[in-house]
Figure 1: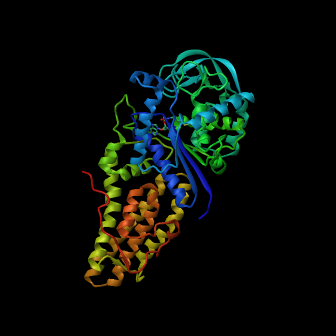
Figure 2: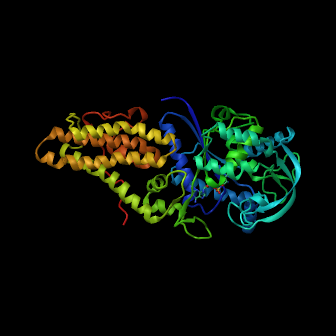
Length: 506
Ligand code: MSP
């Protein structure tokens, strides 16, 4: 155990009434990493929130005949409700419309202007309205937005600029010196080849063509353009430049910004440059994960290829959805979401490997020993092998989590559960009972229950409700990091009530 801190963030989401499973992906993963760090004894601060300004919101509110604030208020409640149904354990939910954020963003903008890092100029560029991004002609792909592939239009306006070009050399040095600043490695190559090596141009950071944003303090016809407003949430949420900056002092720099691959550029080039200009320490790492797709297509409203994630939660259970998001795709790669695959994982891994194992072990303990477990330590070779495997689990899971390889960490756990099932096949407890070899039988049941307990301590980070259910059935409070060793369950321990963990879905 230690008392180190860990600051982890998700991107702040554009308020959308149409959240899909892809949106849940980043947040479920960040939640599991946060829970894992807490298990290891870290003092964790887990931040998420919503990114509420901009032309798109202004337009949508107009269409609905409400103010932008009224429009986002309703949607943000919907997002919070979704995070609640997914058991997301965030420590703070920041809204870019929150007063403290607005006040600090204004201060940051003014400070950068006063020190010469922001200047007034004129912008003429290709603008993608849906992405709210300006692009240079050379960045366009077939004349269209390189991020979303949609049409762009030529826009000319007076704007404030951030001197991004000034930081080019320092960013290059950062990429060279801080080897794990961008993960996975392939994303770093993309950044270097597609952006850094082409040279960094100064960045337009204000707009005059809409008003739903944070006004520039000293020139209020300009609103602060999305990236300074959005990226700074990671420090305003901690109280940077406010009366109480104790969280900022405690948690900054971030240990991990977990983001989707399309916003890696903003987080690894623009964000560090802004922090350099503010003379603040840089985040330790940015991980750019891949996208969940549906049948190979982007999940999108226009394709109409998705359901509200709550529908999946209602059918399969929250932990089946979490498990799928965490297990199916190695973090970093794109992956496919399908209801068929979700069903398959639920039936095979959750109902069968885990649920059935627990159920039959508790049933046998009840049948043969009235639910009281004992450990006479009559360990034969297969038992010794299982115990050895369980004893190496912690090291394996921690090594994978250190690499943010969540999928393999889960596989390590399920590997033990599969081994428990095989162990039952080999030991055949019902034969031991028939032959009245009760000490051997007690040992076998103890070894399985103890393996399940240890697996569940880890599972709690990924599937919290399931782990709590297992602990209830085991009737144990040996659920913490310091009980992660084999043999911790007491002799004569009475198990709890048996329950079905996961129903098979047909
Ligand atoms: N508001 C910006 C982030 C600003 S952070 C300072 C934004 N918002 S977003 O709502 O469009 O996306 C939020 C996150 O959801 C991003 O990390 C994005 O990659 C992720 N995803 C959206 N659709 C996704 C999938 N289909 N699959 C996986 N992640 C996806 O960008």
